[in-house]
Length: 186
Image (cartoon, rainbow, N blue to C red; front, top):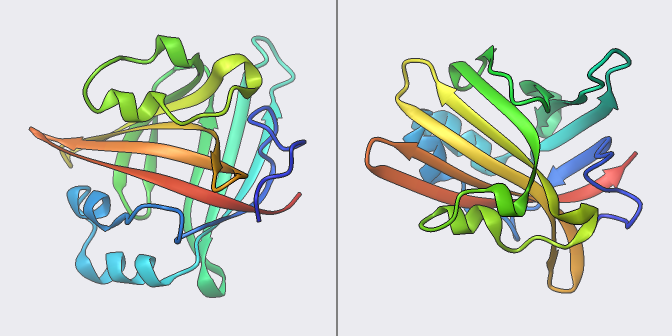
């Protein structure tokens, strides 16, 4: 189901299911990130659900927090992400990707790098929110890869969806994918 107009980047709280028909294949990215074939195959067959809780911390500087619990078909627990949109680097031990460190922030589309693959990160978004999107950057500790994501809303086939544009880089190689999510409920 497309995202209703009252659901915005300022409050993504709710359940979201990856729309595999509208999303790009994630296998090349997962392979670059060192995920084994068996797990990649399981991910490709599973329905991926994100349960998102978004809130603003009560203490200054009142940062936005986005906590995401991922589950796969049958309630199998996946990755839990806790993002603070303040562009401070934080470490995390991920069940799929291992040790990573990353940072996230609100950013205007005009502030994102231009040219090359970065154009993929900058384009396709709706104009809502004054052009602000969420940018996330993650680096594998020991895996040799980085992943950059931009989150926003896109109009696809006349419907409004939450989407993420992802670029993963390892050495001189890079892969990109668009992930599209159906809104389920608050």
